[in-house]
Structures are given as structure tokens and as C-alpha cells.
Length: 317
Image 1 (cartoon, helix red, strand yellow):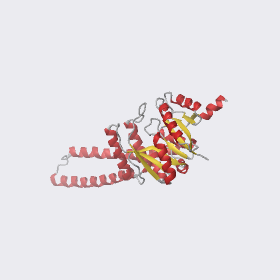
Image 2 (tube, helix red, strand yellow):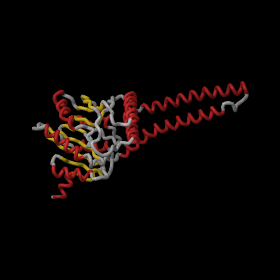
Image 3 (cartoon, rainbow, N blue to C red):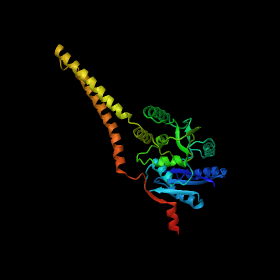
Image 4 (cartoon, one colour):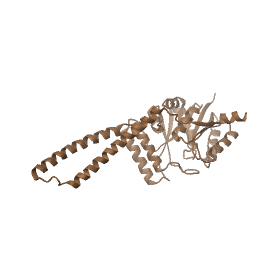
């Protein structure tokens, strides 16, 4: 009996890229005769004609399945939904913009099967086409989080990853609302091999990841996989208390000796502003963790489904 690969594709306003993606993944599937495929397209509340494009593909190709969200829940939710709805023995995440080259899938599958790995991850060895400032901060983020966290996150790693059903089920068992998949992949462990490739530009459309969205995503990763910022806030508080005590002793001694309590007023204001800034920073760090805890306690669903291809078939019948 043939094994099946579920190709999970989160889609948000990808109407221009989808036809190109479908053509490329079809070529790959035709070259892999020993494997069955399903293409699971997750419409993440798109505002364009992405869902219409997906439906038209589903009508002409029975391998195409889809899940449409009631609104935009984000790529992480789309990836989780893909895992829940997938039926394959192997699962692969792919972007619709062809920045994750489908042509690598054949090599990924052969490596996974023949060399006994649980997953094959991909990473970019170059960042050509990216703004230099974005590339700089991305590298800084990976260096920072690897020093702060107990799990390893590979610089340049993509969500483009082929994995076994066992690993997929392990990820599905992690029900947290605030998700950071790159960290979750590392957290569940399993034997992983990395495949390197050069950066590929989008085939069509525009990126949905602005600098601000990437920054917030980085904060999600840090908060999700390390509590070191809380320790840093505590250490800063202790250091400032010690420095404040030393400065109070200094003020008392200079006042007794020279009798000029007004001396040093500008420096006092600077110190006050500095300490206030540190306090606000520490409160912000604590606030981030409290906010994530608050959202987790609500037990809200990670996503809400509007319709699937089964709903469309039911209406037709």
C-alpha cells in the first residue's frame, strides 16, 4: 500500500501565487509515483479571491482539500489546523509563494525514508533579496534566543519541513494557544536533518510579514520558550537597589561634610529617569508573561472553521 504525503499550505491573500504553486507541486507529485498526495490548503481568512481559487482547484483535482477560517487567525493557527485535518503518513508544510521550493520535496522524502530521520528541515544559507536591516535583526534574534533558551533554533530555518506522522501527533499534543512552531519543532525533539538552499524570491504577490509583525513574532518566540527575561528583570531590580543604597550613603556623607544638599540635583533627575525606565521595562516583561498566561487560561480555540471541501460536497448533494 502506498504511503501518503499531506502537503499543508497556509494561504492568506495568495490568489496570485496559488496557480503557480499548484503547477509546481503537481509536477513534483507526478515524479513521485510511489507516493500518494493530498494538498491541504488552509485559507486563513483571506480578503482577496484566494478561497475561490482554492475551490476551483478542488473541483478539478480530488487531491485538493481545504479548510477556510471564519477570519484571519494567523499562520500558526493555519499550520495547526493543517495537522489536525491531514490524513497522510508524512506531513510537509509549504508556503504558497514558492519561497519553499517544491522541487526539494523528492530529496526530502528519500532522505527521510532511507536514512531513518523523523523530519527533514530546511534552512536558507543566504538572505538575498531581503532588506539588510531585516537580515541583521533576524540573525541577532537567533543568536539571542539560542543563548536564552534550552532548545536549539537554527538560523535561517524555514517552516518548510517534512515529518513523520509520529512527530506530527507529538506537535498536535501541544495545545497551547500562543504558538511558535519553530520552537515547538525543536521542543518535541526527534531526529532531524537539515537541508540547505539559497533564498528564493516570491513568485507573485507581496509578503505579509512586515518588520513590526516579525518583531512581535520574535517576542512570541522568546516569551514562549524562555523565562530568562524575568530573571534579568529581577537581577536588574537587585542591582538598582544596591546602587541606590550606595548613592544614598554618598549623599548623606557629602551633605554632612559639605552641607550642600542641592549639589547633584541634575544627576539625581537623570538617575530617577533611568530607574523609572528600568522599572517600566521590567513591568513590560512581566506584563508579556502575564498576558500570555491570561490568554491561555481563557481556553479559546486556536482557530474557527467557516467551511471545508466536505461542506461544499454536502451542499452539492
